[in-house]
Amino acid sequence: MAFWGVEITSKKPYTHKYDPRFGRLRVAKATLGHGSSKDKSSLRCFVGPNAPVILCSLFPERKESVSLGLEFEEDDDVLFTVVGPRSVHLCGYYVGSRRPRDGDET
Image (cartoon, rainbow, N blue to C red; front, side):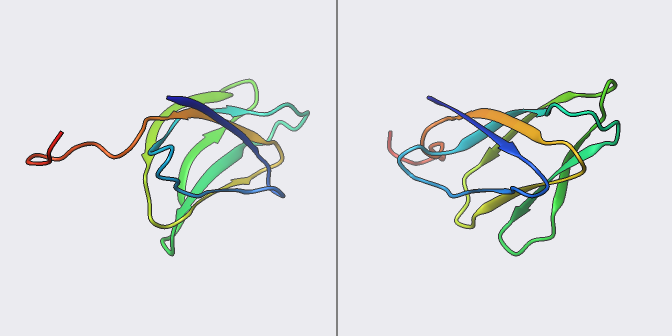
């Protein structure tokens, strides 16, 4: 297992590319970055050509972090973006290669 973390801003999105050496990425938590703005920042996720999914909206002094528990193992890249004035920090870890399916050899 290896730790993973990234800071995303409205001007600096992050693209996660699947690497079979590390395996699935598990994103565990999103935390609002430092700043003075009182406006919300929303974290969005794009997988391949699909429409974006809003993973969370973080509000200063009300909801500054959220547990996510998401796993990604995709042939397509996964793009994380932020809409709002403050950055969002994501942290998680790699959980290894794909899970064995029924009937797979161990």
